[in-house]
Image (cartoon, rainbow, N blue to C red; front, top):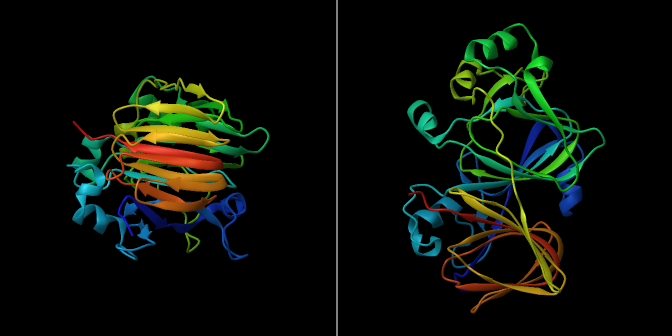
Length: 319
């Protein structure tokens, strides 16, 4: 077996706000009593690691392969695997939260900061994205929280199937309503909550808030980070580039026949819908909805063939 494609075993996580949407959307097995809130599809994070499904790395953790075989990852100089790709089932409101940037996270948590991209695959009627706040000073931000004036603090935006958002570190965010989300984020699990809608942990306890740290890192005043997607429409496929910044490039391929792709460094693939073939010079794999794969930097090109909707995330090397 070549080292041009790594197929991954992913990790389901129960959450108080979870449900059954992930399993239903991807055709996965789920116990009836489970409330799956997150599906860590491509992860090298210690809180839920993907494992390799085929030789020569079968059953190895992704972090191990990244550490021992940097030649598969464009000889990246980043200490840890840079991205984490999830699918989130939000069947009840999660917390209002904000994430730190790299500098704050390294100084206070000995971890990486967190910016993220979200593609809203399914949304219930009247679902709203919370994106930002109205406070003009840190003191006003803290005062609104202390007085329970959350409705006056947050900025709400309607959200619909197929919408996307870039949520950089420092943006207060959350949602109200039911949604299914594909998410690409920096490889971090650091979240500062300011309000939690009476959610509880696995033991029935209310989850802690981190209001002081949230106030340290939240962007004041709020500033939007709008996306401007570009679309390449061909007879055989459509490519939507949602995001191209210094952290990652995010694309969606809607494939009717086939698309040949230059592998810029290494690529993280999630098959959202359909089935087909993933081909490199040395390897051909049958793929279907729910599959998660890495096309390593050993492959200079790859082809996706069939009738599929595929998300591709390309990590950027830190300068």
